[in-house]
Length: 137
View 1 (tube, rainbow, N blue to C red):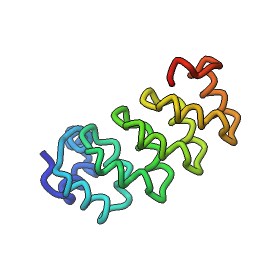
View 2 (tube, rainbow, N blue to C red; view 1 turned 60 degrees about the vertical axis):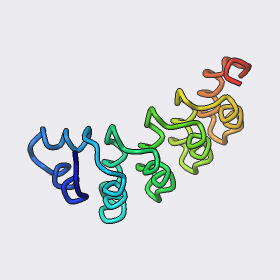
View 3 (cartoon, rainbow, N blue to C red; view 1 turned 90 degrees about the vertical axis):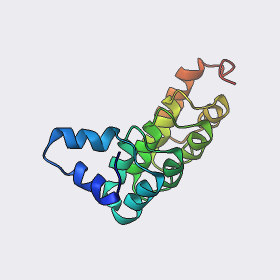
């Protein structure tokens, strides 16, 4: 288990692949994740990449000023529909595209994305909904 924010950063930046892997798969207390987010903003993408990061941390990072962090949040398989709905309104089109393709995106959110300004997002939604949308609503 990762015990401190400094431990996480050390593991992440280690030249030992085993230590880097630990940063990606080991659990840490929620307070440790919050400390990493606060003290090491450059490590936020790595926090999201950790397989065990709690939803409470993702809920904070969903509003990160860095689009790369928000995109990584949108990539998380465990992301619930309400957080995907939030990301469906992101200014970054790549994030909205990820929401359109995410398996947990609700039919209601997909319906709202049918009117997305980017034609590629609209096309992805149409592909998911099969032109009707009724199968996911």
